[in-house]
Image (cartoon, rainbow, N blue to C red; front, top):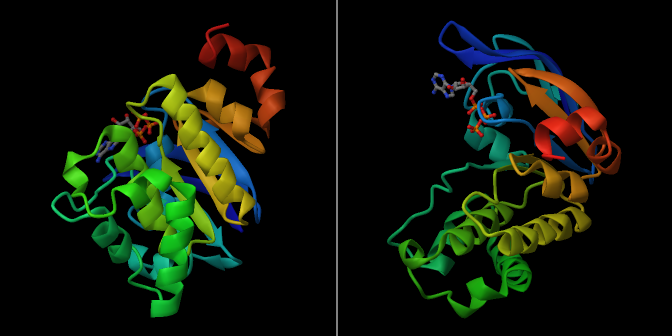
Length: 233
Ligand code: ATP
């Protein structure tokens, strides 16, 4: 579904990512973990078309994404949920969700609204409430819900657990797993390596803009180097 081939990218002439190779298969939940500043967000920005590669290729669904704008990639099924959530604060839950369905037919919008409300019942309960009155966790659910309204085949999630308690983080990550179970591929960026590795089918560890380790989620969680550097064990 997604392949990064020796991707290098950065800001201006500064190179942040160095020849990153990464894959997400159809229906897979893949985690990208690493310390602050390792380049995880930059990787997602490149994939969603916000940041053009300096070298290498990004292949989505068999074709190179070079030159395709983020809105075109959304139509093609590649949807990014940025860390800042970028909600419409003065709009209600339902209005925010409908904004996410700009690519959809009316009947799909109704069906997807039901699916989002089933995944996050709190959004259904508060469908008339404006987004800016929400807690961090509820805003994150709304941001993911809005992304689902576009009918993604690949969802890029940037730190959905930011600011959440450990318990709420599990609730959020369980929802991410449920999304994967509906057949949507997910690339999940997390600083919270322990929980991310626990739910991921596969994972990549990034350091200073390079992928330094990859493997099954459980396998990496048992890796001595990962345990010392990221799990505090
Ligand atoms: P975090 O968890 O802090 O978001 P990250 O692994 O996602 O970490 P990035 O946000 O991708 O890391 O940042 C990687 C590097 O790129 C950092 O050194 C950061 O300072 C730099 N960087 C990020 N955004 C910009 C930008 N807009 N302009 C210049 N440098 C940037």
